Length: 320
Image 1 (cartoon, rainbow, N blue to C red):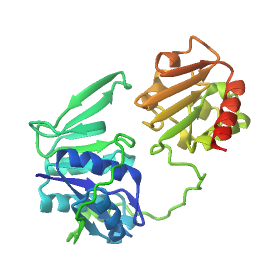
Image 2: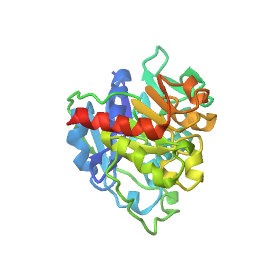
Image 3: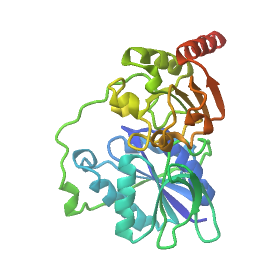
Image 4: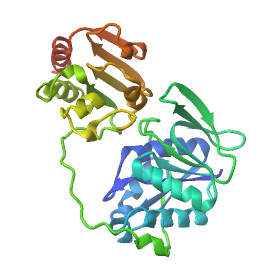
């Protein structure tokens, strides 16, 4: 069976969930070979093996932390040349898409971004994408070179599938461009204790109907009762009610959770583009004609200040 290269997203050896999802998808089209780079890369081996990686290629050079993107592209290209895979899968983060695009250009291959599913085809992997603000679903395959595909988080279930996970060191000579952009400082992101927005299985969002930053704790309380991430519409962010890092939409972050709860959000196309691929969508809005109701699986016509606290109370009661 052909091998599939999987780029590992990890933090000091802690593998992030989108990578484990990629291993599930990779097994549909071949044998996963994981590539882990940077500090702690060797510590990823056991987790990756538990989820299907037949081989784990690692390199812990300091360049990955000291410089931006290009060292990782150099390394992934070296792994590609060593493995000759049938496809290369990369998590669909901002950095992941840049790495994938640069790799595809270097190896003369086609690229598919933001896939939400992947299956084997007679002429190569076939990716499912949501396009035109998620108004259409397409089936796409690369017809030139080795497919380079970035996949959105929450596109597949994480499945344990123990494999050999043979550890291998990656030999690499960095290009001159690798040291062109140096990282001069880092500021740790403050932890909220909630899941990362783009990776969360449940997202609870608030919009214009929240009517002020002082009312967002209502949204946060519901999110915390569900172990969810908190999102916000562009209107709420532009008004200064919630940080831009939590914006869901075409000019914010795209999410695809198992459950998305929209509170006080009208459903403008800009917002829909960032959450329409959610598996189950629930909306609370006092306007029965709000466009969001054309999209939802379940809709509640009512004042969020009445509905959301009752929902939070009921969830907490059932948990207790």
